[in-house]
Amino acid sequence: MTILVTGGAGFIGSSLLRQLAPFKERLVCVDKFTYAASQDNVPDNVELYMADLADEEAVRYLFEQETFTDIFHLAAESHVDNSIKDCKPFIEANVIGTVNLLQLALEKEVNRFMHISTDEVYGSIEDGGYFVETTSYDPKSPYSASKASSDHFVRAYGETYGIPYFITNCSNNYGQNQFPEKLIPLFINNIIHNKPLPVYGDGNYTRDWLYVKDHAIAIDLVFHRGRNKETYNIGGFNEWKNIDLVRLLCKKMDSKLGRPAGTSESLITYVKDRPGHDLRYAIDASKINKELGWKPSVTFEEGLEKTIDWYLANSDWLQHVTSGTYQEYYKNHYGS
Ligand code: NAD
Ligand code: TYD
Image 1: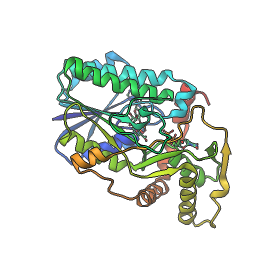
Image 2: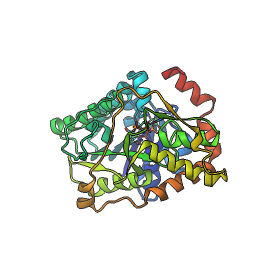
Image 3: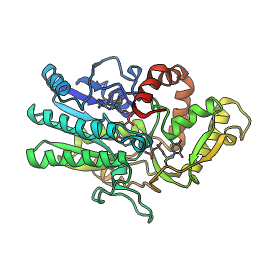
Image 4: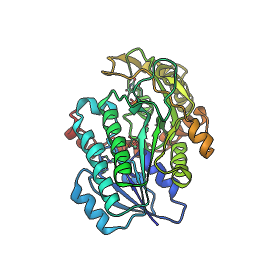
């Protein structure tokens, strides 16, 4: 078996590669190596190709070099704030990239197409309920609109041409190897460097958080035991208001860095809100729990401790991914 993992040099893709690495399948990773990727994220026993999935010829070339039995599709532009600045890279990577990959999966008759998506396709849930697999799509940001579109194309290829597929929609992930632009790694990095912690709006926005390794375990489980053409919601049963999460993170960082209590909290700065900011994401992960027996293996406190410890032990990685080349790529695509 040869498994293709797209976006394996990014945050969740590399966690999935570490999850799959001990098994006997041959692993191939394709990645464009955007600012969010790092070769250091990829385990040693993985064959690496650099290609842009939005480039149909490049995708075709890859499928001429290799015969893939299955595909885990994670490659994407993934940061909401960037999609607000410019949505075109999101259309190219997330929509065109997915369709190019589906087309080759169809032509080469791959066994399974695992599409890794987000709970953000369901929009914002503000009445105290939860997103279930049948919740109507209602994306609000350009990022979630592009992911919703990619989900629709996966289902369309499944229904129209019969490609076997699974879709997973997961809540906010945190953990090692996440580029420091999203809330948790950005704030860890800023605290280390005594920089302000920009909390958007009043900080009363709610997200469900899942440790990335538990997401990788869930994807692997769906791959082996999921039912064809099914969607599985994945979440941490772990909702936090941003400001409460930030305060907890500050407390833990003070203690890890040996700084007086309150040092990190003093860096909190309330800034202008994100346009169209979704108030609450809340996932009901009971289907994957009941059907496949999955549940998170670590508590949020444990996962956060592991995450902080990893960033403190890997200052070289942090330095590297925030250095020249990466910054240059980012500036060229999204401005400063
Ligand atoms: P990431 O930004 O850390 O990594 C994305 C990877 O995709 C990078 O390595 C990047 O170089 C690669 N990539 C981007 N455009 C590409 C292209 N055109 N061709 C080839 N490679 C390309 O993102 P992540 O957080 O690891 O997210 C991975 C997937 O999981 C995404 O599809 C995302 O929508 C989904 N997801 C993320 C979260 C989260 O909290 N981060 C939650 C649920 C679902
Ligand atoms: P983020 O990590 O960007 O994930 P998403 O937008 O996909 O949920 O943001 C998580 C929450 O934190 C979201 O409500 C926006 C907020 N946030 C801030 O308040 N400040 C920041 O600097 C960032 C990056 C996010």
